[in-house]
Length: 344
Figure 1 (cartoon, helix red, strand yellow):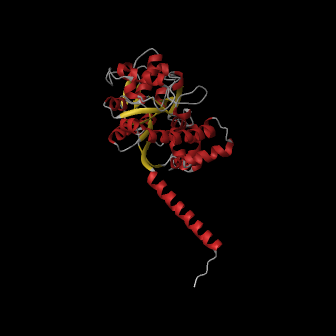
Figure 2 (cartoon, one colour):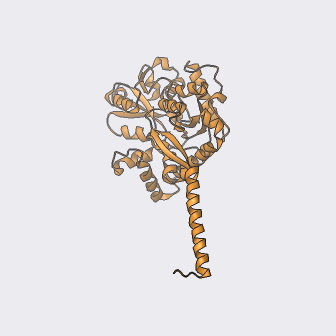
Figure 3 (spheres, one colour):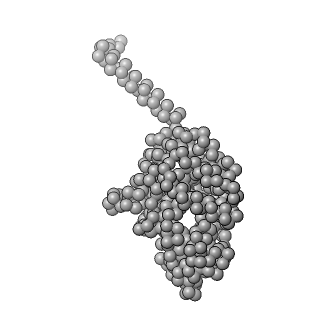
């Protein structure tokens, strides 16, 4: 026979209710979590997404995240349009703009941006070209320049560099090589003369004897909105709460990244911890000691609260139009949804 006092019965009932509430709460949380796929490149500049994932910021916003990795911007844009990926962070490309014109994609925020005083994208040349007199961007006229494909961010940078130096890309040989790795190999072997790329790659490959640094992209596009946050038009227009939760988590990741590696307000311990986190995704195939310097070298500012430099994005759109890479009738409103972040 079981004997139970009023006090013990009260405790048992309360304990059971607490357990039920815990189980029910867990069930609600599990049901409420939205599964999303986030497109990324294995670059330091994509770290805010990795930080948000590792620190639970996505979870806090009720998001269950899976990453899908790409090697260039345009395939990611296609994946967003097809629904294979929900959110992406990468450079504006001709392919992305054309998909926006078809009603498939919207830019919803800003990410990486060139900023005075912070090492940004670097202009590189092969040692052979350097020895042949290409010691500054002014000598790139008549030279080859590596790009992933026509309408890529590399194409835009090459054009802006040429324009400021008084010539055009028609005076250069643009060499489409599809993948970043292929461009690196071609630059090292002298098959292409020049290229520009984010610092975590540029500083690493120019440390050897085959590649030389000759300039900074910030000197040619000082306010360049290098990467943007984008999603499908369907999500941007019909799932505003999902967008806001994604941007909130992403922005927290960006704040932590900027504090640790850009502003360096977290001290050396904080910097090391951040590099260790990023190393899970960037240069993961290298020992930490070899990967760490390159990861630190890639620390460029990620815009606070995913603010978007609309002035530069408009300049990029105008450039794509001028090159005949997108329809001249495309308006900035077709490309960008300004409902979610501050623009400037």
